[in-house]
Length: 234
Ligand code: ADP
Ligand code: MG
Image 1 (tube, rainbow, N blue to C red):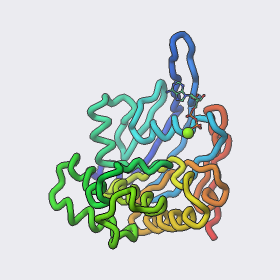
Image 2: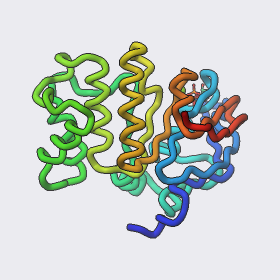
Image 3: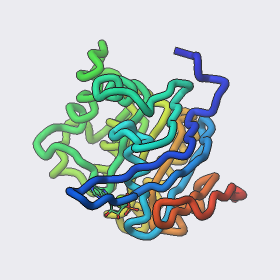
Image 4: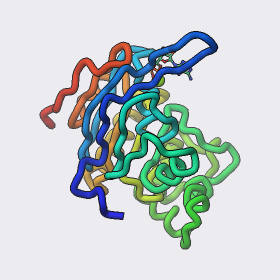
């Protein structure tokens, strides 16, 4: 589907989310608006509780907004039901998490094949191998998660996120569990993938060093955007 290709990948207008807990309403996101172009790299920063994960969940089609409009790849996804959201998610979005979210007893190759099974793709093993080679794990494909270092596990998770060739890669604190050296390696990898494949990269981070490598930084506070700044690249 190419209908959205001349438009920004992401168009968000007055997006808001209020969680109801019994009689208490928690306004987690209070009306944010922005566009994100294809192949951009964006860091989202802000204190704990500022609404970063709520925003990522909405952008990732894991949840629906209370108010506002979200257009992804030219399609209004703000009012889709569960099933349609799952289709949009599988087709367009890859996720990477702080805790890697790998299954302990599966080989790297099997983990990366999983999204291809859900998408009923042919040629699964070959595509999974290519994705693992892309993240530098060509020689570790038969290893299970417990046999891999943290950095290697995050590489497997990145290969799994990218194997369906999504337009959007969402990473919620992808280096939060990694030491400085490994953080730099994973950042190099994510930025190389961003420039080589044109996948749009949006990541939540608390680290200035990590954010400074993105082309744009969005800062949040109390459910609102307080800064949205394009950065000069070194
Ligand atoms: P961040 O990721 O920036 O730490 P969150 O988006 O997780 O912030 O949370 C924003 C606000 O929404 C916080 O006040 C949090 O307690 C609240 N919140 C988040 N998820 C839920 C939920 N499922 N139910 C109720 N309140 C929530
Ligand atoms: Mg969070």
